[in-house]
Length: 162
Image (cartoon, rainbow, N blue to C red; front, side):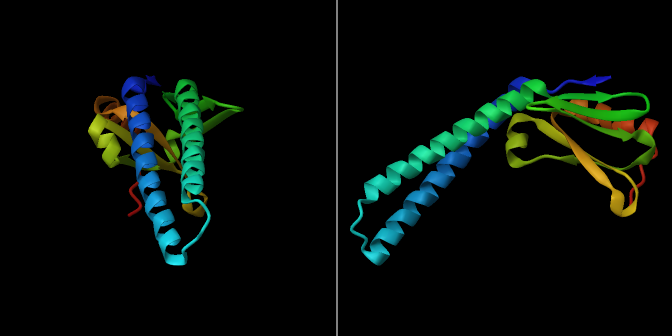
């Protein structure tokens, strides 16, 4: 069973999240530069620092958007009868697998931005003791997250260690 990510909602969530993040960083940077300028009475042009900082912030946020767009296009989640698989081919091909027999816990996770777009993340913890691992199925619709959670619980022996 291939788990389909709601890519339109996920992309909107990523873009708006990056814009909000950039605005917050911009405001904090502006206030900090003004505070330092007034505190130490620096003669160096505050405008140069301000515009260079803004340029660096824009470059970083654009790079982050490109990276997230490429990741979103390359990730594939699958739930097979005996294992869960997360595969993505961004620069190198990576594959995370978990046998359903060793799944310890399944948790729903939803940030504020995810709530705005109706997206869910499903954290799957597997392994034994200190050797436990986890991975997250990101940007799932509520229906897909519930289907995957029910599938894992039906096929595997989910043990709540709490």
